[in-house]
Amino acid sequence: MQDIKEQCHKNIFDTYARTPVAFVKGEGCRLWDDAGKEYLDFLAGIAVCNLGHCHPAVTRAIVRSAEELVHVSNLFYTYPQVQLAAELTRLSFADKIFYSNSGAEANEAAIKLARKHSWDRFGPGRFHIITMRNSFHGRTLATLSATGQSKVHNGFEPLVDGFTYVDFNSIEAVQSAITDKTCAVLVEPVQGEGGLNFASPGYFRELKALCVKNDLLLIFDEVQSGLGRTGTLFAYEQEGMTPDVMTLAKALANGLPMGAMLATEEAAKAFVPGTHATTFGGGPLVANAALATLGILSDPAFLKGVRETGAYMHGRLGELKARYPFIKEVRGRGLMMGIELDIPGVPFVRKCLDAGVIINCTHETVLRFVPPLIAGRSEVDRLITVLDGIFEREVK
Image: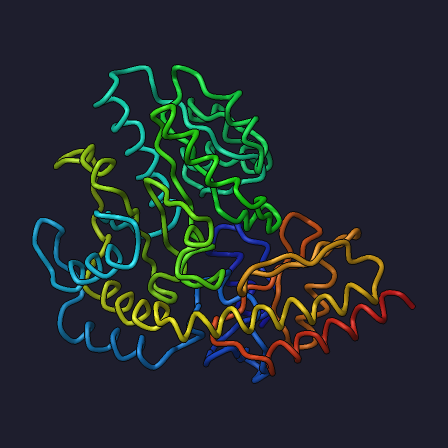
């Protein structure tokens, strides 16, 4: 371990606060480090490996594609890319797909689309986008500017112009921020990095109505909440409305780098040849992996299982809240779950790791649990047992 740590810090930028563990193998909900220790994974690469590690169907798709065709330019047609687009549009509100390599790139595309759409309809000067405080949209210069967290901005000023931050879950705040320069609202249906924040019932329906009234595009960032994470294929399905644009990534190819921007025909027509492009987006290998992944994640029986396991997990976490006064709240939907503490959460992450369970902490005091969606009651019970033991020692 010492050798790999030294080599890492010698040759790789220190942009991550890495935990001193080197993983060498994964299967299902479990990982093994280079010393042979087994871990229960309740992080899934931060909501990426929704089918668990090395899922056989995805592995077969990757191997087959690697033997047939890995890459050609997007100046040509490829079957997997088109087949995946057909499935994504069939399963969602959208008519058109733009592929990228990450969630940040998908959000970058959505920002450009919103500006171009407004330019085409209303001319120049209407380019501002309203985003939410405690949001997270990526690390490119435009997407970190869209992110409503100052800690992400520090050191990168001046930011990209044209973003206004308002309180999440407040229609009045959005209404007050709309000007004659506003072209869109960008929002996560669930704020993941911001502390697992959920909106009140009806908020998104009101937000959509407000956008329609003011000729604004409504963009949903479902990079973390999409693809089964909240118990439906897309989180917007639980809100009784549809956005105009949606971004996906993370779990789309179950660990391979892939993102996508989905849009209605009306919004999508702003992009024509030459307005946006990418070298690797939607390549045959990742598209085949995504097709295999989506085929499983979109199965109604599979999603029903996610909801059932999520309800069970919410109840078990509620048992812990009843016993430990430093747990302020349990919140979540599907298998996007968290507990907010009134004390720092990072020490508990380290203690869980020592006990062979991988979780993480977001927003300093929220322990986040985003396990593979194949997790069941036995995995939840193992997590609860470990947390219970750690929390009990905390109060002694």
